[in-house]
Length: 315
Ligand SMILES: Cc1ncc(C[n+]2csc(CCOP(=O)(O)OP(=O)(O)O)c2C)c(N)n1
Ligand SMILES: [Mg+2]
Image (cartoon, rainbow, N blue to C red):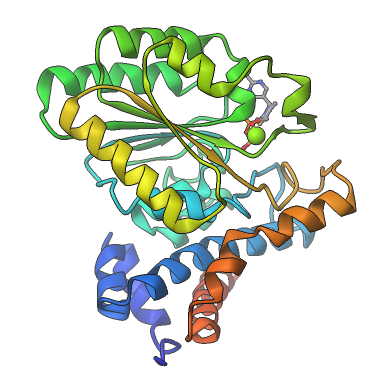
């Protein structure tokens, strides 16, 4: 067992200096599963705090939380570098935290503060920091992701572009133009489709004909699916496709079956209790926790960090 609970200040100091990954190294050393559990739990704690902050009237507008899908970005970002180009969507907080760990600037951004990532003007959905971009328009980032991958193809031998979409984004026509061109031009892009079986309130069986796999294969992209709701499986498939795109300079598509455990945005969940109970049983964090001896210490550390950041913000 480790005593992690004293490291709140170190986190705040290092993540402000864009040294989140040094914090992870200093704190967890070679204990990779503790580190992964911390990263997933930090995102969950951040998102829960955010929902509370809306309920308590600290902020207005809207937000889409990543509760239930934390495992996807934590696993993928083990193989994505800060100089790769990341194109995220409306559900971007988890991707962003995995990219750089700048939790306080993200919360400040959502609170509309001038010390936020985009000086408080981007809000929850429109982030830009270094090579990370997000866009709240479904499919809005997709052609840009292809453009950036095309540029990397011409000017770079190792960097890649990563484009996150949801299953609902399969209804946007621009996705197919993008799949087509990225395949034809052999662009180094990885599409990641986080398939949580629902788009806002519309279940996938009411808006998607055929299969995601068949659509992707028809454009001749390399395709993989992670369907086990298991961190190690996402890590393995993600690593394989990221290495493929990096080395072969060709596009690939990873579909990850996922659980959206929270509402679409703040309180708008139309799914019934029985279904919610079922998907909570496959909560990847809960299952991952079973192998973590210091889980309480790690949860305390993450919760303390979020609490400290939040209380500084509302002072
Ligand atoms: C072009 C466009 N149409 C509608 C919306 C409103 N909207 C925001 S998120 C969302 C559902 C997205 O579903 P999916 O792509 O599956 O992602 P998820 O929310 O499940 O992560 C919708 C309809 C939007 N942002 N952009
Ligand atoms: Mg969805």
